[in-house]
Image (cartoon, rainbow, N blue to C red):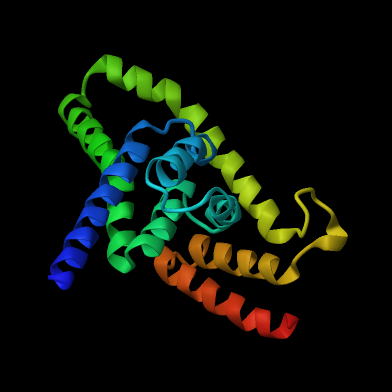
Length: 197
């Protein structure tokens, strides 16, 4: 009887985690930081999965780790509530709306891609997309090569710079598979970290 009650409670928690992060994924527009109030409302105020102080301490984990803030929060809260099953349910709830939206957009794009009006819109957006990608790339390179957010040649991380040059050579001149190059870069970074420490 106790086992059945615990199982029912765990199933309810899994469903609630999925639905809560489904709502966050569907209605949090404007990026991860814009989603933080909604995450706090669901996680702290509505379901009390974390206290206010725990949420404040955990917020650094959401924003410092790689990956999107909402997915990091979903995984963290899911593990805290139910374990790995909770992390899976919360993360699936968080990404499901984006998957649906992208699928619908892809369907309409494939169906109407030959329309002249759509091609005009895409051609107009292309320079803006290139500028956004370039800006993100410069930001990532600055964070990878320098200790601070500004460029200072005395603070340069020479190991990261060397790995970048090697990878660019392998990709552009040797035409190596990008996945192999990424794995190779990871191995070089691990080896380089031993020389630093």
